[in-house]
Every structure is written in C-alpha cells, then in structure tokens.
Amino acid sequence: MPYVIAAPCVADYSCVEVCPVNCIAPGPADPGFAKAEQLYINPALCIHCEACVEACPVNAIFETKALPEPWKAYAQINADYFTQAAR
Image (cartoon, rainbow, N blue to C red; front, top):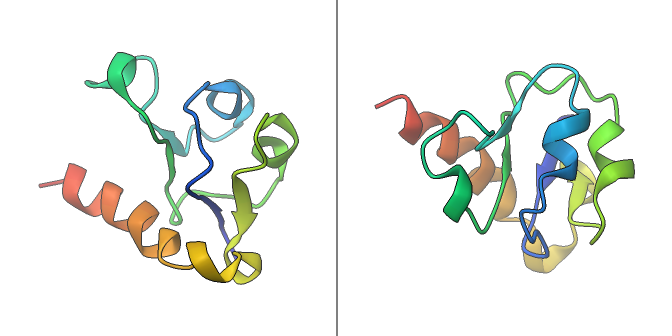
C-alpha cells in the first residue's frame, strides 16, 4: 500500500528531500511550490520505503490502510492531485 500525506501536513518539504523516487509533489521545480500548503504522494510511484514517514516533522504521513478515520479521504485527495495535474 502506498503512503498518503494527510491534514497535519505543513509543507516543510523534508519528505520531498528524502524520497528516492521523487513521488512527492509539489517539488522545488513544480509550479506552486513556494505557495503550497499541502504536499501529496503519487500512489502509482510510491515504493513504500518509509523514508518520508521518518522525515515528516508533524507525523502527517500514513500507510493508506493505517489512515486515521478523520483523514481517510486523503488517500483519494493525494491520488486526485496527480490525476488533475495531468490534465
């Protein structure tokens, strides 16, 4: 199961820096990077390495099946970010 970034995200980009497959966006080269308030994990690219989990200073990253109930919708929110960005 891929990882998901949920509501506590403060977009400090620690997770972007440690991701070995560049599956977290927006990244430094992406439009909107400087103004992003939330980051997203591309579920199609996530390799489940957990590097982002360790790097997150606010514990906002969860395995999809372990998302707390109030944040379950973030699995779809993360996926939708990449679907909408492709349009």
